[in-house]
Length: 247
Image (cartoon, rainbow, N blue to C red; front, side, top):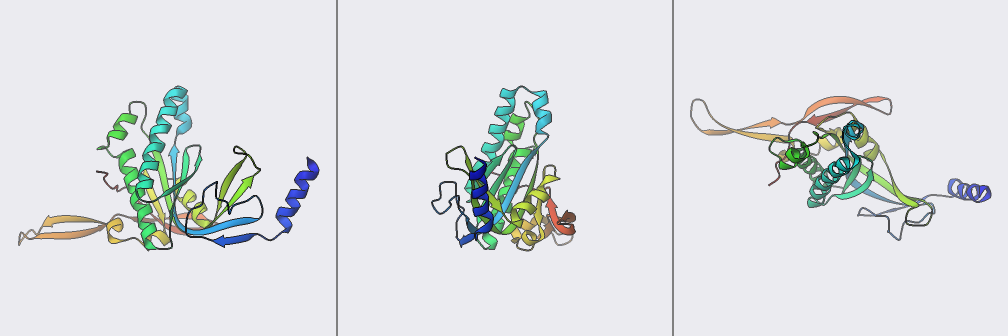
């Protein structure tokens, strides 16, 4: 076994790593992904969502109840993500990665809209999902979003339960970093903020003019700037408590 591991690691470290550019989000059964030094690279907006306080939930409820809460939580996230062309990957404990493929503002705004709809279903007082889950506990979560190039590569060894995909790139790391410290709040990188459309950036308030009585529109920026530490540097990000209603 020792010789086999050492031989494989020498092959991995010493040989070139071949990357192919694609325009879709790969999955575990993609034939272009092997255990060799190969990777697939694509542009995407990356949405990371993570449940807060899951250890406390486990301490306060039996495992069957916790399983039901997780099923309800993930079902909500996956359904909303897929409705906006999000590709769900990497269920990891209480966290999930969703990729919105494409090198355009369209994918960025779909990711932000999905996040705002997730917030509505999981945290809005109008949501029946929130009310039903609160039979046991309130759900606390954080969402982070970034955009850019991502490399996907297959890791492990052959066999259905011995392999997985690894997602490498700043969009993944940065979305996780932004989302990790938020509580029922959505955070986005400055890259995402600078590519928001009017509908995901502004809340339109319609009010009658105090003097003329005419109906006027006032644009309110839904996002507030803050900073976080990434790679030893202070970077701007933007957060919101707004949500997007789900009909």
